[in-house]
Image 1 (cartoon, one colour):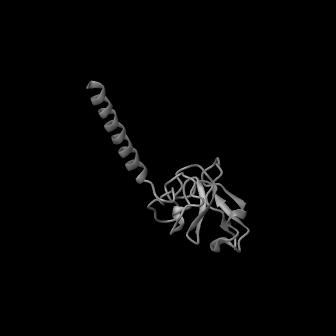
Image 2 (image 1 turned 90 degrees about the vertical axis):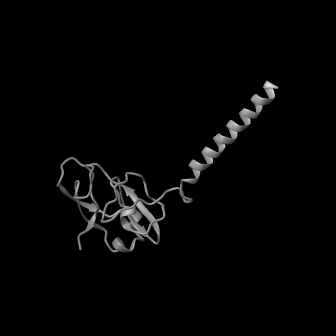
Image 3 (image 1 turned 135 degrees about the vertical axis):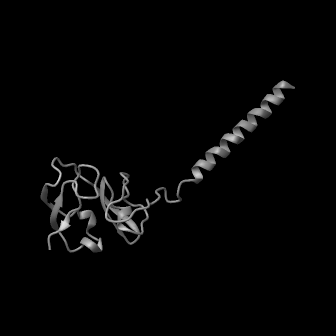
Length: 130
């Protein structure tokens, strides 16, 4: 009888673990990446947003990635590290942004090391020089 009772307890434990696991998995978004709540130019995340659904730029443009929301999908490239906060340099707009309306006609510009809004010492957005 103990073996049967023990077997029944194990079934309940397995069922409980499956319920917990499914509950945790259901917290994730259907598309795998949930956009962060953000406002302004830069989001606070460091996660690669490339290919994620979006409604505004800051969901794609974060601390580690320069990005744009283009037709509801993030297009993003990783930011490079820099040494001196406030330093400026010439830059080329990434070819990944060739179909992004905001920078479509811009090929080069300038960028600043750790501009306002970035918490990491990385190059800011390549801003068109037009």
